[in-house]
Image (cartoon, rainbow, N blue to C red; front, side, top):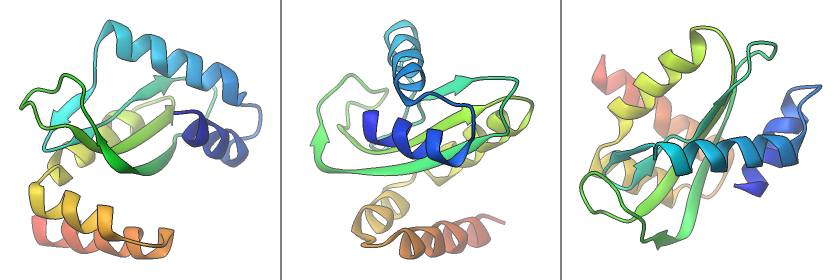
Length: 125
């Protein structure tokens, strides 16, 4: 979570990485964001910030409680305000399929991951 928070803070001026990480951890304790197939969408709403997101693939699956008991393999961490985070949450949930998760976890560069996301979204319509 800390690495994602640092990357998100660097993409959105005015954000503090430690505060983002703490807020996301607290939100996860209150209401876990696992959507299934090894995917979680931890997020922190901040109305003063344009939405930013970081896709994080885990080197090893993380055995935590999930809706389908599949360990986490991928996180889409979102910070920001307005309606955009809700749209990103919905898009992430649609991408949480076994094939898409496997493809994204095999991506070796951010560009490759983004290409795979775009391909999966184009197939979903």
